[in-house]
Image 1 (spheres, rainbow, N blue to C red):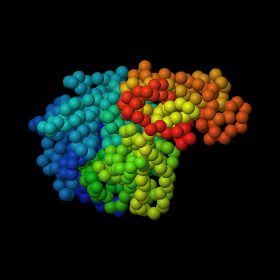
Image 2 (cartoon, one colour; image 1 turned 180 degrees about the vertical axis):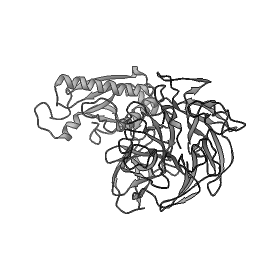
Image 3 (cartoon, helix red, strand yellow; image 1 turned 90 degrees about the vertical axis):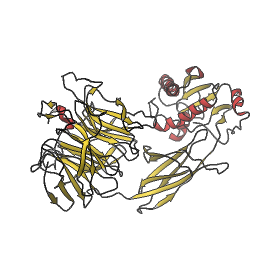
Image 4 (tube, helix red, strand yellow; image 1 turned 90 degrees about the horizontal axis):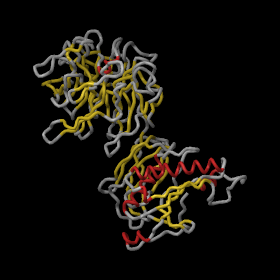
Length: 544
């Protein structure tokens, strides 16, 4: 397959039966390329095709002498056939290629693949190729797709396409040959933040990707990734469809080849399931089809992935002092390694629900504006479908006296050994500092970063200075005036215990000295907002 054909690949006929799947070639296929089904609600399919229609632009692409791909929509019958096929959107289709879409669960935002073409202009890489890029658009009240924009992690120098959103719209999976890829094209993912921004794209690793081509990801509601690869040892030829469970941003175990009749000696790809069903569609260019690439309807009889034992955690977030319900609290689940698994918002009854693996250890936290974070650790059992009860209680204290100084009351902020970047668990605490400084707009703080006594004195001083600067920069990026924060590194000059140079101490004791503190410079401004503040004594709380 040529480099530019990242969006193109795929064929078969009649109904084929096997132990695991029944498949059939649908009647709507043409002699052209038809592939890449996505579902738009319950009964509508969106797919790509190079077929000729009265409405489509019929300019031919020189590499296959077929018209450029456009997006089409059709109604899905109960037998998987397509009826009433027509162009999907005049806003999204252009004279260049469009294919492979995914929608947010409210159907108000679409992500789609398109040639590097926008505002009636196309761009090429350094070698003159027009590459594939990821775009998004939002639907307006009249049903038109507007605000068409390229995603910020695209580049004119590499392909990015084939989007697939997870069940709660927090992760976007895609195909790319960007730097860091293991092969010709890899499956990547990126976190989708609530404010509409994106994290840093990450590669799904060697359990998923090979030195050849991986393409067309589809992530289901159980975080099982279906994708195509021509680099696995058990492949049948061309692209084969595989399935693998995704946990902690990586594939778990070995990817499973779906076998015949899903896979053939040619290219098989773009497998998707209808919502909540064991039926769906995939694409293939196998022998016996009607055209270049054809769309097939399938029914899954036996899942290739053994379902992992799951349990359900339900809890309520309350104010600790009064027992009042706290709807809208952000509840976050972390695994035993401290990696974020899932976040959810407590509903109007302050109830949250989480799905966890059996026989595993977790930590769950709850945060809400102007409340202290609460956290609990728990372990699930090995009994499937068990429901666990877990309640979280938030206290409303904001400040605390420690060693005679008034400080912002937060949980400890930790840094990795010899590092100064802000870890995800530290970001939760720094968000609280930001909220407090927003609540008290005149508040000023001295931000002090401290190390333990290990390593050379000069190195510790330099390391703590970098950590203080990194912490201040993070807060300033959230909109806080830098003039309100004085950041200093103190190295090991202000130890809180006896663990100085040459003293044998435990790791726990050394950790007490590796701390970041936020000392209030002008506590009188707090009363201007609150009238009075109930401060916690140093005996009850410490900040490390």
